[in-house]
Amino acid sequence: MDVAMVERLAGPEGWSLLQALPEYDEASALQLQTRLREHGVDPALLAAAMGQSRLRARAREKFGEFARGMLLTSDGLEQSTRLPLAARHAGRFAAAGIALVHDLGCGLGADAMALAALGLDVSAVDADPVTAAMAAVNLRHWPGSTVRCARAEQVRLPAGAEARTVGAWVDPARRTVGVADARGRTRRVRSLDDISPSWDEVRGIADRVAATGAKLSPAFPHAAVPPGAEAQWTSWHGEVLECAVWWGPLAETAGRTAAVCGPGSAVVVTEAAAAGALGREPLGSLDTMGDWLYEADRAVIRAGLTGALVAAVDGTELGADMGYVTSSAAYDVGWARRYRVRAALPFSTSTLGRWLRDHGHDRVTIKKRGIATDPDLLRRRLKMTGRGKGGSEATLVLTRVGGRQVAVVVEPA
Image: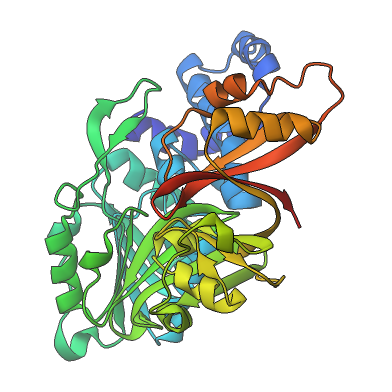
């Protein structure tokens, strides 16, 4: 798609067509397209509109009803911030008294929409002409928002007194333009040196504009957290989606934090919460396994804050950075799952298989961390086929204790 087609879709004819299309259904899409072509709809415009209809159906999970009024690209949709998380980003700027935010690398405009919805003016740029044109359409309801095609490095940012009520939101490109994977998606870059703008350039923006935030990969290294800044790893329904770094008045808690989010809820875990576990050694052997096993939310694990779970349940971590904690007592922790321990065994296929069969199990759910094993291959070796035996399902946690591979059989509490 090019800018000219974006303009056609946003024009009266294209927009009417878009809004008249029924909810996208893959099974009937070809028949619908054929019927509309027979009624004289321009084939190029129709193809573009059908593509948008398909993307809007996918976008509903991220944007809800807003998806019906947006223009989208496949890559842009995948990289866009979910609206609840964008609202959390915007809330930081609003709470800091920021009036204007420079959105550098705005993509389809999800974060810009959340900022504008809180009454902030937004000056957004994106290096891709089509993406910038779509973002302008998506922000059309907010007159205080502007979008243009430009690189973040080309934007003149204020400094000194001029920057007191100005913020910057940077979403560096983390994909290689023009290089696609087997599914047709552009490939992710892994190094901070390869994002655009680069990490050095992002830090330069933060040096100039005190109220700066940057959306980065969940793989952001702990050692790269700038002094005095906050790096927050955020999960949505257990999936870690981002690490956002916040400088100046946008940093609520300096250091590493984790935000565990779901519809209508968010719990933040900090380094201070993990301080109570300092000096506690991980579990040395299975002999001291408690009656309960806790699994920290992945954002907490990514942020390196499993110690907060150790402190919360007065427990012991099974292995360093694995995210599993055992305790002799049952606690309700909103950002961790609790399991009752049924057995704790050295990881031996024969021993484990015999225990499972003796206890009437013919199928297993496998959770693993710190062990390189193929779950499907392990099921076959354990003879856990679940074929007509009338047995039950067991949950296995495969990890390490004292440097050795172990299997903990648990049941959800």
